[in-house]
Length: 174
Ligand SMILES: [Fe+2]
Ligand SMILES: [Fe+2]
Image (cartoon, rainbow, N blue to C red; front, side, top):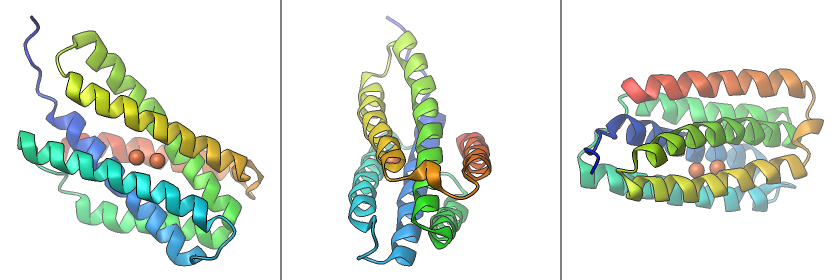
């Protein structure tokens, strides 16, 4: 029987990420409108992010984990990233989704490796496993909708991934 580890940091960063995702999609939809070429696709992904966030909110409340103190910043930064990429065009918006989801996939995979090795938190592992499947679908959908055709894709993609990596590190601790 392994001792139960403190998973507060994991839950904190995951909730921050799912919250940020809802804000990115909100920013994209605000710019692209309800009738844009990819709006239905984005709305469907946005609804899944709302569900992910709600489940992490509930887990946080049950376990008494405090949310990141940077929530107001992610509120703004996520929205700005979504709106900013949508302003560059629908393919840039999809490039943003592809980059973010790729980073989230890696992040969730690392967490799952740890959780599965320790085997002490099946509840959290099940959630992350389920959400990771959705994030992978979002990434594939973004690529199918032309993410890689965005102008300056390699740079945009690399910059957003770097931003996500920083956000992940910061939100574990603060
Ligand atoms: Fe998500
Ligand atoms: Fe997602």
